[in-house]
Image 1 (tube, one colour):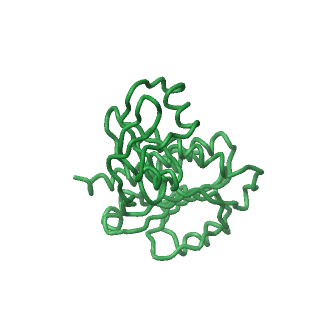
Image 2 (cartoon, rainbow, N blue to C red; image 1 turned 90 degrees about the vertical axis):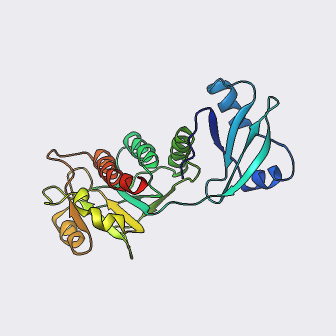
Length: 239
């Protein structure tokens, strides 16, 4: 859910912060004050959106003393279709980039998976959640995507499910009619070196194979290409 407007800024606070803000002025967290005043160098009174990331957000004023004055209180409405993406473990830097761009492109759930050609690295999901949070703040998206590890193959029901495969005859855009009527869409991309032959055969049973490019793409590039193609179709719903 995007609420972009020039000269309006978004930050995330706890549910308890929003509850307190409904009663009186509340001091913004030190982290958010530092980000707005020191990092972004914003001074004076600011138009502000404060979200808890999942249920509610408030619109109001951040005063010069860094207290938030609530003006409006709203429930977060998560737009349909719900977009769920699966990407294999890759290098941390590239995976962070994929999370950032997937967030900007509207993914509601992001899953990391282990395939036959990938190993599960040692890292905390919290660092990726911070990347998603930053991407939301930059794009005024009030709902934070969920980021989790998942088993492979994923168990999915009641969804339009795509898997990016080299050599597939159709593209995501060819499924415009199905996309327009879907409430839940899933995109799965493969690892470096592609899925194994065994994995491909399994995926073809339950997933719609789609091609993304005449070129061979890295995992993170494949994910963003697929989401961009999906967004091109969904954009028509906004007109």
